[in-house]
Image (spheres, rainbow, N blue to C red):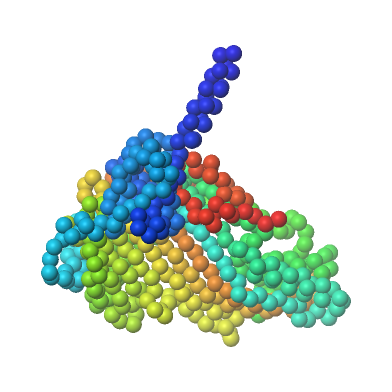
Length: 490
């Protein structure tokens, strides 16, 4: 009886703990529009960020404390959990206009170039890029939008015409399915990033998940494989085939035998790759000499204009816009710089007008065209107990247009060496969104860093729909509506 009562009590306590998780939305008090990227501090130097829809979730441990909400242009708000519930989990923030009038009174417009110069001269004082441990949560979202797909078997003398027609119909149906599909995938992981310097780091992963519809997994290579499989089903299945494109041999022994198929569901993170990729994203927030952000502080490349003043977390910030001064400069954006110590507290950027990143057009020679047409980001910093600034949230969105036209040739591995010519063309847009939330950070020394042992790989839990319980009591980014509603096709 005592054991039964204990189990019941334990179950009730678990329900109570999980029920303590609270999700709320932050909105503008006047417009009622959601406020993105508000910082929700659950401790002196810990907390989360509101997502693009204004939502955030805090866990059972954190909600025992009052939370502080701050966002550029708004007054700080300190609330208990009971007060949030009284607001029906919708938290309005008020613009900090009146406070600004009291704090900043001047008839002289601040000089943007002078502010940028002071920000540059204070970089080493305001930031500590080396020997840090960051507790992190990462989310990677991939989107593919195919505009057109054409598949056709053009030549196969030894195959009956009816089979070729059947194959082409199957290929056309696959193309239609791809165009009509919502092709998106989400990858999350939580862990720690140990940074020695910009060139060296180690990573530890506590948990990793992937939200993926295998029926709609249509990377360019995956599409080619699916098309190949359709073609193979209409050939002599007792034979194997070489696959060539132009003069290059791709595969030497294609067949329909099940043990020859690749395992598309190999779900692991190679931590050496994940470490390099995460450090690369972290480097986007740094200001060393050749860093990405340092270009925005180069007066030879960009010109600056004072836009306004803003108020964030009890700090006055200058709002400076930058635009390209020279043709090679590609971005435009906004820098938020503290009036107190000239620390850069936030950066927003995107491509300027019709400018773009990498581009190559080998349409005639190799049947490939690629243009990087999207590069935008937001980086938000938070001050620690030593008055040093560290990245709190990094978002990077990249996108590209692609065109691929391939002529493939199946060559039967037999004395007859029968050949089947197959062409396909793909055209569309790809977009990738990377987000890195740093929940806490602290200093480490060289000895600490040396002792960290990085594993070779860790498993990924693959899901066919979003499962909120997997991240209960974790400091994470609240998913957007599209992720919460994600589900696989039949």
